[in-house]
Image 1 (cartoon, rainbow, N blue to C red):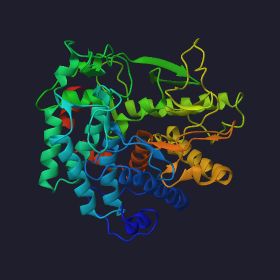
Image 2 (cartoon, helix red, strand yellow):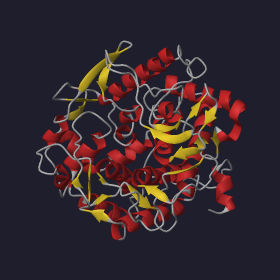
Image 3 (tube, one colour):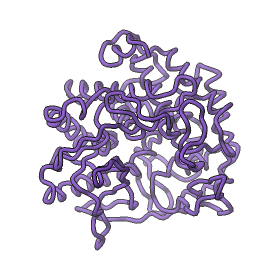
Length: 442
């Protein structure tokens, strides 16, 4: 990326926005709130602009918080967030419209014509420069679904570009969703490898997979039964007075599908008649209460406006590792013993679209308080560090693509609802929501 664009993205408004068929919703937030969200969003977009390979469009899994190149291993899910980021950047004028469209075309061409795939499904980890499979990874159902979230977003954001529309349609319609059922009538598998075949796990309990099932039911070429929506278990939990459907997994399971699917004002007609948007609100509020109770053990780490634990890097025996730690445990079950006072900013950031009244003050407090202590290694070129521990003083040196992505998309949905608008204009999605009985409440 040339210097002119880099300077612009970090704060100089030189380019007129392109309008992708959306309108900006009025903001009830203060000018200081908006300035913070604008700064955070521009920085997070910059990750996707700089860490995508210019010849493939594949987005690297991680980078240093100030732009340091860590790896050439790309994440197919981060690439889905990155495609969506192009729409946000073009709309807000952070880059020129044609730059965004050209990057989207490059990415879609590579995915449609050159990237290795199996029946339309992509490998979880790929080489950013070549697309080759990395880490002996699986052909991943959920990561392909998150990629398709971005593919279908650019299809409507850039709907005046016939090639983008055609390529995006090809990518979606090529996915053989019944194949991923592996003989089961309704429950999709987690993935497949050429060495071992299908993984022995299915998406059978509430998790981040709602976008996967909706896309599968919506497919115009290879659909699965609408009954699949109600085939997975919905286990309720009550914590600190909040009752919601949960999974024994990090807070992001309540966020990722919502980055694209607009569940607001909708309730299922069958099952438990769940309002999934309200469910994520309750899950976020319960999670904050969980952190406030943890403050008894880690008073330096958690407080009213410093909270949040979701999948992130963590420090274990002097080594940085990846921890898929969760939130409130069910009654009678001990909390995750790995929790050590680490705070993950994307936990609050990913819930901006649900609970801005608690998420926004948390993020602003974290930046104001810890930038003074840790400087740019805490809040740098790409926004917040992935994770930090105020109890021990550890600050992670990296950001992770999917966490940066949920931060950007959640912030944009809070501010304008644009990502929801672009994605929901896909007619297949509207049809699937009708088929499963997820209708607007009167």
